[in-house]
Image (tube, rainbow, N blue to C red):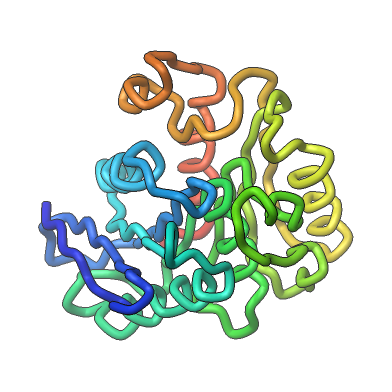
Length: 239
């Protein structure tokens, strides 16, 4: 395995962390955009997710967009676009199949991913959203000015896999995942939704691998999203 940090923008303190399998084959790559409310990133929804996908035959790349003193939703969107451009440009040396690119975003990172999924002429083939922010209801608490991604969805929006917990009080279903799912359906965008009766906001893989960052707790039902996602991804990563 190789881990490489790529500086995207020094002034904004943005980086792309590449997690690459040692192979001569071109593999699918998944970008991971962590949550954290624009404060800081945690290993449970960045590096550990990247490593989990690596074990399933993916190359992985964690997008570290501006947070803390540099936080900005607009600059975050630019960082996501820059990360995709970097991988597409360097695909050969990274052993990446550019026909099998996707992106996973958690919470605030999910809003950035959802927004990017609405872009025309997209290099990605699919996106995954974990308990995503969709509407700008959290802007004041996060200290950014975002937008309602529902207003951006068209029939060209990428196929989307969504998961969350009905117990989520940070991004409640009725304000975020629920309306967004309806918007996708109205625009005939292929999507799969798993809203679990267990779990809560911010628990990432929800398994033993991240239990130390989830107060020692494991959420087996919620954790099943990962295998469900892998099954769904076969539509976009298999020959």
